[in-house]
Length: 328
Image (cartoon, rainbow, N blue to C red; front, side, top):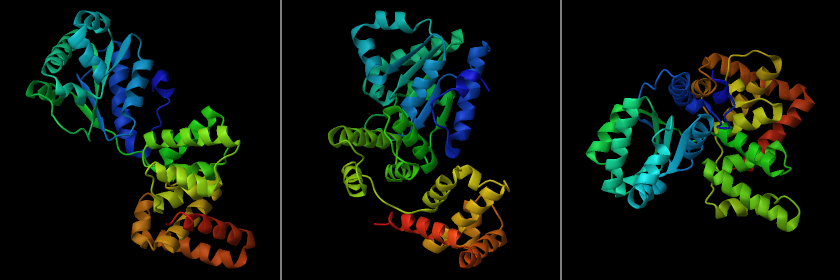
Protein backbone atom coordinates (compact mmCIF):
# COMPACT_ATOMS: atom_id res chain seq x y z
CA UNK A 1 0.00 0.00 0.00
CA UNK A 2 1.26 3.45 -0.84
CA UNK A 3 2.40 5.13 2.41
CA UNK A 4 0.81 8.41 1.45
CA UNK A 5 -2.55 6.72 0.98
CA UNK A 6 -2.08 4.80 4.25
CA UNK A 7 -1.71 8.12 6.08
CA UNK A 8 -4.99 9.44 4.76
CA UNK A 9 -7.43 10.85 7.29
CA UNK A 10 -10.35 9.42 5.32
CA UNK A 11 -12.05 6.80 7.49
CA UNK A 12 -12.57 3.63 5.48
CA UNK A 13 -15.49 1.54 6.68
CA UNK A 14 -16.52 -1.94 5.64
CA UNK A 15 -19.10 -0.62 3.17
CA UNK A 16 -16.54 1.55 1.35
CA UNK A 17 -13.49 -0.72 1.51
CA UNK A 18 -13.86 -1.86 -2.11
CA UNK A 19 -14.35 1.70 -3.36
CA UNK A 20 -11.27 2.83 -1.45
CA UNK A 21 -9.15 -0.03 -2.78
CA UNK A 22 -10.19 0.79 -6.36
CA UNK A 23 -9.36 4.48 -5.96
CA UNK A 24 -6.08 3.67 -4.25
CA UNK A 25 -5.05 1.49 -7.19
CA UNK A 26 -5.79 4.28 -9.66
CA UNK A 27 -3.83 6.89 -7.71
CA UNK A 28 -0.89 4.57 -7.07
CA UNK A 29 -0.54 4.07 -10.82
CA UNK A 30 -0.47 7.84 -11.28
CA UNK A 31 2.21 8.35 -8.63
CA UNK A 32 4.40 5.61 -10.10
CA UNK A 33 4.23 7.40 -13.43
CA UNK A 34 2.45 4.46 -15.08
CA UNK A 35 -0.39 6.66 -16.23
CA UNK A 36 -3.88 6.42 -14.85
CA UNK A 37 -6.02 3.63 -16.39
CA UNK A 38 -9.29 5.55 -16.49
CA UNK A 39 -10.11 9.22 -17.03
CA UNK A 40 -12.10 10.65 -15.43
CA UNK A 41 -12.57 9.00 -12.05
CA UNK A 42 -16.07 9.85 -10.81
CA UNK A 43 -16.89 9.62 -7.10
CA UNK A 44 -20.63 9.50 -6.44
CA UNK A 45 -22.50 9.61 -3.16
CA UNK A 46 -25.23 11.24 -1.16
CA UNK A 47 -24.79 14.39 0.90
CA UNK A 48 -22.45 13.82 3.83
CA UNK A 49 -21.00 10.52 2.54
CA UNK A 50 -17.46 11.95 2.40
CA UNK A 51 -17.02 12.81 -1.30
CA UNK A 52 -15.51 16.23 -0.70
CA UNK A 53 -13.25 14.97 2.07
CA UNK A 54 -11.99 12.15 -0.13
CA UNK A 55 -11.38 14.45 -3.09
CA UNK A 56 -9.41 16.89 -0.93
CA UNK A 57 -7.45 13.99 0.57
CA UNK A 58 -6.30 12.71 -2.81
CA UNK A 59 -5.48 16.26 -3.87
CA UNK A 60 -3.43 16.76 -0.70
CA UNK A 61 -1.59 13.47 -1.10
CA UNK A 62 -0.78 13.90 -4.79
CA UNK A 63 2.10 16.15 -5.74
CA UNK A 64 1.20 18.93 -8.19
CA UNK A 65 -2.57 18.64 -7.87
CA UNK A 66 -5.38 21.20 -8.08
CA UNK A 67 -8.72 21.12 -6.25
CA UNK A 68 -11.66 23.24 -7.46
CA UNK A 69 -15.27 23.36 -6.36
CA UNK A 70 -17.87 23.15 -9.11
CA UNK A 71 -18.80 26.78 -8.52
CA UNK A 72 -15.15 27.90 -8.76
CA UNK A 73 -14.76 25.95 -12.00
CA UNK A 74 -17.78 27.67 -13.56
CA UNK A 75 -16.56 31.07 -12.35
CA UNK A 76 -13.11 30.42 -13.80
CA UNK A 77 -14.51 29.38 -17.17
CA UNK A 78 -16.78 32.42 -17.41
CA UNK A 79 -14.66 35.12 -15.79
CA UNK A 80 -10.99 34.20 -16.22
CA UNK A 81 -10.51 31.17 -18.47
CA UNK A 82 -6.85 31.92 -19.26
CA UNK A 83 -5.92 32.17 -15.60
CA UNK A 84 -7.78 28.99 -14.73
CA UNK A 85 -6.27 26.96 -17.53
CA UNK A 86 -2.82 28.27 -16.60
CA UNK A 87 -3.44 27.02 -13.08
CA UNK A 88 -4.50 23.49 -14.05
CA UNK A 89 -2.80 22.69 -17.36
CA UNK A 90 0.31 21.06 -15.83
CA UNK A 91 -1.43 19.44 -12.85
CA UNK A 92 -0.84 15.73 -12.35
CA UNK A 93 -4.30 15.55 -10.81
CA UNK A 94 -7.29 17.85 -11.21
CA UNK A 95 -10.12 17.40 -8.69
CA UNK A 96 -13.45 19.09 -9.40
CA UNK A 97 -16.05 18.83 -6.65
CA UNK A 98 -19.86 19.08 -6.89
CA UNK A 99 -19.94 18.93 -10.67
CA UNK A 100 -23.74 19.12 -10.68
CA UNK A 101 -23.17 22.89 -10.50
CA UNK A 102 -21.39 22.63 -13.84
CA UNK A 103 -24.45 21.00 -15.39
CA UNK A 104 -26.16 24.40 -15.20
CA UNK A 105 -23.75 25.94 -17.74
CA UNK A 106 -23.15 24.64 -21.27
CA UNK A 107 -19.87 26.55 -21.66
CA UNK A 108 -18.46 25.07 -18.46
CA UNK A 109 -19.46 21.57 -19.56
CA UNK A 110 -17.74 22.00 -22.93
CA UNK A 111 -14.60 23.24 -21.19
CA UNK A 112 -14.61 20.29 -18.81
CA UNK A 113 -14.95 17.90 -21.75
CA UNK A 114 -11.96 19.56 -23.41
CA UNK A 115 -9.90 19.29 -20.21
CA UNK A 116 -10.79 15.61 -19.77
CA UNK A 117 -9.69 14.87 -23.35
CA UNK A 118 -6.46 16.86 -23.00
CA UNK A 119 -5.57 15.26 -19.67
CA UNK A 120 -6.28 11.79 -21.07
CA UNK A 121 -3.87 12.44 -23.94
CA UNK A 122 -1.16 13.63 -21.53
CA UNK A 123 -1.54 10.95 -18.87
CA UNK A 124 -2.90 13.41 -16.33
CA UNK A 125 -5.71 12.47 -13.97
CA UNK A 126 -9.15 14.00 -13.44
CA UNK A 127 -11.33 13.20 -10.43
CA UNK A 128 -14.92 14.43 -10.26
CA UNK A 129 -17.38 14.31 -7.37
CA UNK A 130 -21.08 14.05 -8.12
CA UNK A 131 -23.95 14.10 -5.64
CA UNK A 132 -26.50 11.35 -6.16
CA UNK A 133 -29.08 13.76 -4.74
CA UNK A 134 -28.41 16.63 -7.16
CA UNK A 135 -31.70 17.99 -8.51
CA UNK A 136 -32.32 19.85 -11.74
CA UNK A 137 -30.25 19.53 -14.91
CA UNK A 138 -28.26 16.51 -15.94
CA UNK A 139 -24.90 16.37 -17.66
CA UNK A 140 -24.81 17.13 -21.37
CA UNK A 141 -24.55 14.08 -23.66
CA UNK A 142 -20.88 14.91 -24.35
CA UNK A 143 -19.94 15.11 -20.68
CA UNK A 144 -22.10 12.12 -19.80
CA UNK A 145 -20.31 9.99 -22.41
CA UNK A 146 -16.90 10.97 -21.05
CA UNK A 147 -17.91 10.12 -17.51
CA UNK A 148 -19.25 6.78 -18.74
CA UNK A 149 -15.86 6.01 -20.35
CA UNK A 150 -14.07 6.66 -17.06
CA UNK A 151 -14.16 4.89 -13.73
CA UNK A 152 -16.96 5.43 -11.21
CA UNK A 153 -17.30 4.46 -7.58
CA UNK A 154 -20.25 5.13 -5.30
CA UNK A 155 -19.66 5.85 -1.62
CA UNK A 156 -22.14 4.17 0.69
CA UNK A 157 -23.69 6.01 3.61
CA UNK A 158 -21.15 5.92 6.45
CA UNK A 159 -22.01 3.09 8.84
CA UNK A 160 -22.10 3.46 12.60
CA UNK A 161 -18.50 2.35 13.06
CA UNK A 162 -17.25 5.04 10.65
CA UNK A 163 -19.42 7.72 12.26
CA UNK A 164 -18.21 6.66 15.71
CA UNK A 165 -14.55 6.87 14.71
CA UNK A 166 -15.20 10.25 13.11
CA UNK A 167 -16.83 11.56 16.31
CA UNK A 168 -13.83 10.37 18.34
CA UNK A 169 -11.48 12.14 15.94
CA UNK A 170 -13.51 15.35 16.06
CA UNK A 171 -13.58 15.24 19.86
CA UNK A 172 -9.80 14.75 19.94
CA UNK A 173 -9.18 17.60 17.50
CA UNK A 174 -11.44 19.96 19.48
CA UNK A 175 -10.11 18.74 22.85
CA UNK A 176 -13.63 17.74 23.90
CA UNK A 177 -13.37 15.41 26.87
CA UNK A 178 -16.10 12.81 26.60
CA UNK A 179 -16.12 9.06 27.09
CA UNK A 180 -16.62 6.57 24.30
CA UNK A 181 -20.25 5.90 25.18
CA UNK A 182 -21.04 9.60 24.83
CA UNK A 183 -19.28 9.62 21.45
CA UNK A 184 -21.26 6.53 20.42
CA UNK A 185 -24.52 8.27 21.30
CA UNK A 186 -23.60 11.18 19.03
CA UNK A 187 -22.57 8.80 16.24
CA UNK A 188 -25.78 6.83 16.25
CA UNK A 189 -27.91 9.94 16.19
CA UNK A 190 -26.10 11.44 13.19
CA UNK A 191 -26.78 9.66 9.92
CA UNK A 192 -23.93 11.21 7.93
CA UNK A 193 -20.55 12.85 8.48
CA UNK A 194 -21.80 16.34 7.76
CA UNK A 195 -24.37 16.05 10.55
CA UNK A 196 -21.65 14.70 12.86
CA UNK A 197 -19.50 17.76 12.19
CA UNK A 198 -22.41 20.14 12.74
CA UNK A 199 -23.34 18.40 15.99
CA UNK A 200 -19.77 18.53 17.28
CA UNK A 201 -19.75 22.26 16.50
CA UNK A 202 -22.88 22.66 18.65
CA UNK A 203 -21.37 20.61 21.48
CA UNK A 204 -18.22 22.72 21.37
CA UNK A 205 -20.28 25.93 21.45
CA UNK A 206 -22.28 24.59 24.42
CA UNK A 207 -19.05 23.81 26.29
CA UNK A 208 -17.67 27.28 25.56
CA UNK A 209 -20.88 28.79 26.93
CA UNK A 210 -21.42 26.61 30.01
CA UNK A 211 -18.05 25.01 30.69
CA UNK A 212 -19.48 21.47 30.54
CA UNK A 213 -20.73 18.80 28.17
CA UNK A 214 -24.44 18.88 27.34
CA UNK A 215 -26.27 16.31 29.45
CA UNK A 216 -28.47 13.66 27.83
CA UNK A 217 -31.52 15.93 27.66
CA UNK A 218 -29.60 18.87 26.23
CA UNK A 219 -27.75 16.62 23.81
CA UNK A 220 -31.07 15.23 22.57
CA UNK A 221 -32.31 18.77 22.00
CA UNK A 222 -29.17 19.75 20.07
CA UNK A 223 -29.42 16.63 17.94
CA UNK A 224 -33.13 17.03 17.41
CA UNK A 225 -32.45 20.54 16.07
CA UNK A 226 -30.17 18.87 13.52
CA UNK A 227 -32.94 16.51 12.41
CA UNK A 228 -31.33 13.51 14.09
CA UNK A 229 -33.47 10.48 14.81
CA UNK A 230 -33.21 7.72 17.40
CA UNK A 231 -33.36 4.09 16.37
CA UNK A 232 -32.01 0.92 17.91
CA UNK A 233 -30.51 -1.55 15.46
CA UNK A 234 -28.24 -4.56 15.43
CA UNK A 235 -25.47 -2.29 14.15
CA UNK A 236 -25.89 -0.04 17.19
CA UNK A 237 -25.80 -2.98 19.61
CA UNK A 238 -22.69 -4.49 18.01
CA UNK A 239 -20.86 -1.16 18.12
CA UNK A 240 -21.94 -0.47 21.71
CA UNK A 241 -20.75 -3.87 22.95
CA UNK A 242 -17.52 -3.49 20.98
CA UNK A 243 -16.96 -0.07 22.53
CA UNK A 244 -17.34 -1.48 26.05
CA UNK A 245 -14.76 -4.18 25.23
CA UNK A 246 -12.44 -1.89 23.25
CA UNK A 247 -13.13 -3.80 20.03
CA UNK A 248 -14.33 -2.78 16.60
CA UNK A 249 -17.54 -3.98 14.95
CA UNK A 250 -15.37 -5.72 12.37
CA UNK A 251 -13.66 -7.78 15.07
CA UNK A 252 -16.97 -8.85 16.58
CA UNK A 253 -18.17 -10.01 13.16
CA UNK A 254 -14.89 -11.75 12.30
CA UNK A 255 -13.89 -15.38 12.76
CA UNK A 256 -11.34 -14.55 15.47
CA UNK A 257 -11.56 -16.83 18.51
CA UNK A 258 -9.75 -14.75 21.15
CA UNK A 259 -11.55 -15.22 24.48
CA UNK A 260 -12.38 -11.51 24.82
CA UNK A 261 -13.71 -11.24 21.28
CA UNK A 262 -15.80 -14.41 21.64
CA UNK A 263 -17.38 -13.15 24.87
CA UNK A 264 -18.21 -9.75 23.36
CA UNK A 265 -19.60 -11.39 20.24
CA UNK A 266 -21.83 -13.72 22.25
CA UNK A 267 -23.15 -10.85 24.37
CA UNK A 268 -23.91 -8.82 21.23
CA UNK A 269 -25.77 -11.80 19.74
CA UNK A 270 -27.72 -12.23 22.95
CA UNK A 271 -28.73 -8.56 23.07
CA UNK A 272 -29.75 -8.53 19.40
CA UNK A 273 -31.95 -11.54 20.08
CA UNK A 274 -33.34 -10.18 23.35
CA UNK A 275 -33.95 -6.55 22.35
CA UNK A 276 -34.68 -6.82 18.64
CA UNK A 277 -36.09 -10.33 18.35
CA UNK A 278 -33.72 -11.13 15.48
CA UNK A 279 -34.02 -14.67 14.14
CA UNK A 280 -31.06 -17.02 14.55
CA UNK A 281 -30.40 -17.28 10.79
CA UNK A 282 -30.48 -13.49 10.44
CA UNK A 283 -28.12 -13.09 13.38
CA UNK A 284 -25.77 -15.50 11.65
CA UNK A 285 -25.74 -13.19 8.61
CA UNK A 286 -25.22 -10.08 10.75
CA UNK A 287 -22.21 -11.67 12.44
CA UNK A 288 -20.26 -12.52 9.32
CA UNK A 289 -22.17 -15.48 7.93
CA UNK A 290 -22.06 -17.75 10.96
CA UNK A 291 -24.16 -20.89 11.12
CA UNK A 292 -27.44 -20.48 13.02
CA UNK A 293 -26.43 -23.32 15.37
CA UNK A 294 -23.43 -21.23 16.45
CA UNK A 295 -25.75 -18.34 17.22
CA UNK A 296 -28.13 -20.57 19.21
CA UNK A 297 -25.20 -21.87 21.24
CA UNK A 298 -23.91 -18.33 21.90
CA UNK A 299 -27.26 -16.95 23.02
CA UNK A 300 -27.92 -19.96 25.23
CA UNK A 301 -24.46 -19.69 26.78
CA UNK A 302 -25.03 -16.06 27.79
CA UNK A 303 -28.50 -16.88 29.15
CA UNK A 304 -27.00 -19.57 31.36
CA UNK A 305 -23.93 -17.52 32.33
CA UNK A 306 -26.10 -14.66 33.55
CA UNK A 307 -27.52 -16.92 36.24
CA UNK A 308 -24.12 -17.83 37.66
CA UNK A 309 -21.87 -14.84 36.95
CA UNK A 310 -22.94 -11.77 38.91
CA UNK A 311 -20.50 -9.41 37.15
CA UNK A 312 -21.56 -10.61 33.73
CA UNK A 313 -25.22 -10.16 34.67
CA UNK A 314 -24.54 -6.58 35.81
CA UNK A 315 -22.68 -5.84 32.57
CA UNK A 316 -25.47 -7.21 30.36
CA UNK A 317 -28.15 -5.37 32.31
CA UNK A 318 -26.20 -2.13 31.95
CA UNK A 319 -25.72 -2.64 28.21
CA UNK A 320 -29.39 -3.54 27.86
CA UNK A 321 -30.39 -0.39 29.75
CA UNK A 322 -28.21 1.78 27.53
CA UNK A 323 -29.69 0.16 24.44
CA UNK A 324 -33.24 0.69 25.64
CA UNK A 325 -32.62 4.38 26.26
CA UNK A 326 -32.00 4.71 22.53
CA UNK A 327 -35.56 3.74 21.65
CA UNK A 328 -37.98 6.67 21.36
